[in-house]
Amino acid sequence: MTEFRRQIKDPEKESRIFLFRGRLLLFFVVLLMLVLLGRMAYLQVFQYDLYTLRSERNRTSVEAIPPTRGLIYDRQGRLLADNLPSHSLTLTRELTDDVKLVVARICMLLELDAACQEALTERSFQRRRPFEPALLVDQLTEEQIARIAVNRHLLPGVDISAQLLRNYPGGEALSHALGYVGRISEEDMRTLDRRAYSGTHYLGKTGVERFYENQLHGQVGYRKVETNARGRVIKIVESELPIPGQDLELYLDAELQQKVYALLEGRRAAVVAIEPKTGGILSLVSSPGYDPNVFIGMLDSSEFNKLRRDPNLPLFDRASRGQYSPGSTIKPMLGVAALENGVVTRDYELQDTGYFQLPNDDRLYRNWKRSGHGLVDLARAIAVSNNTFFYNLAYNLGIDEMSSFMRRFGFGEDTALDVNNARTGLMPSREWKKATQKQPWFPGETLSTGIGQGYWLTTPLQLATATAVLANQGEWVQPRFLANKETKTESLAKKIVNKKNIQLKDTENWKYVFDAMADVMHGYEGTARFSGRGAQYRIAGKTGTSQVYSLSQEKNTTKTDLPEHLRDHAVFIGFAPVENPQIALAIVVENAGGGSTVAAPLARKILDFYLTPERLAGKESNRAP
Image (cartoon, rainbow, N blue to C red; front, side, top):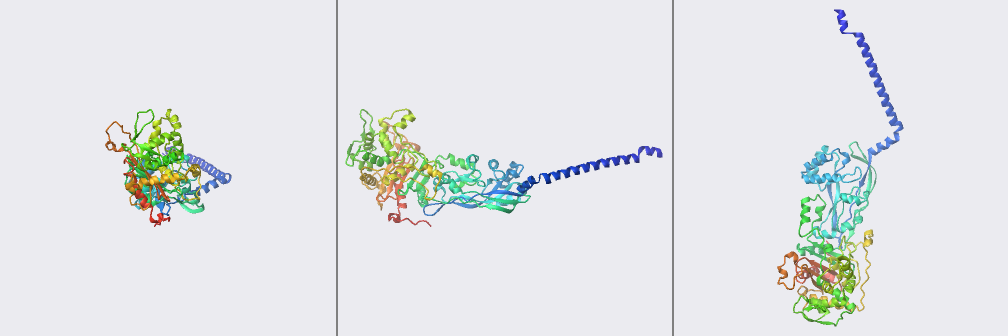
């Protein structure tokens, strides 16, 4: 029995096996210890400098400090664009393994829809510098901040930061003049200096905000911080403070801007007012406008599409980009051209029978008054807006001289110093038609140009500019928003237009045309005489009608039978007081008919509001709070 047990269990053999295995294990443990010690020696001795640097970089990091955007003021020191504190949600994608999951949790916590989730995911992947946070949501409420804070453990890489966001107290009235700031898009990132915009999430998109972006933005600062294992800042090692953006003072009058916008009552229209002596733009209104503040926060796609698809085009700047036929508003300038070139004199008279006819042509170019105005000189032709006189004037002046002289008033080019993306309009000429249409210029086209119709297109800004040059008796002062004389920019240098003053052989011709324009407002035959009644100052004005759709002379259709969008635009230009012009303006009201019935009364209300007793006395009004 004992022998049998020895055959089943052999203690000596088991002891030898155990001893072998123990020695083998010890060998491996010693070997691993030697490898570990060797690795430690390699890292500590041979790689000391490298890992010291890496350790320092893990412990410290450089963060960008965005500059405070410059403020914008009007001529009286009223704040037009300021900065308000706000809390924003950012995501550093290098600190999270699953960006989409984190974004989904954020949307669930903030109760955002699927469209917003897609937008936030796209923003998180916008190209940025490494470890630079991407802005996801701004203007967080206290409740939203609390929800994020409670669930912070589920949101790696997410942080809540305080920043200043742009605010526009003037709202819609100033939307097209100031423009707005918006989020930096992927497309913007391709052209921006990323170093200059580190930590910045917004930049100017349109208007003054866009043109003076470099001045308003300022210079970014930096700080070197020490962080703990969780990435929290525990110490600021060193810092370089940012340089705030430059504050801008504009020629704009905020009260005038608000008044004009209110008077337009949401109609499709544009008004531009300029101070002739300085070229300062007092008001630039395009109606309807939009609230620029909505572009700063999370603009809902449906809200943006509503703005974009609105048939009244609230996003379109009619004042600087809308192009219209100037109509009869250019007759005073053409009168100056005719007097200067000797085509007519101040004593010249024409018998108006109601139409003008070219030699060897059966077509009748009719006056707006079918029976005619009888004996007409230049002054009366301007006052009653006689087309026949100006058909004859244009025929004798010729398209070449007409086009050349009217360009001296700024037609056909963008002459404003700092209006962003203003259009050039079109001053037609023989060369232009040959180059664009491969056709010769016809005499009948000269007649149409002579009453501001045909190919001629101008913006309200150009009309106001020409009116200011006229009020200055030919002296050129380039229109501008900016009143800060010390501001120097590359953009300004590119837009400086060196126009020569219009010097007439007989300076009395200026006064002659001014008196004719005053008769438009105050004369017994003037087309806007009802709008000029009771004024405590003399107004020089000219009404006009910008033709949209040409009615056949043979048809009985009247303009009131047309759909609204085919009806003529009402146009007006003017300046006041005649003896010492302090404001020159241009008005276009779309599809409103004649300038005398709609635009001229509007101009009178604007002038009455602006020309306070203080200004009429030559003093600056003190309306600012």
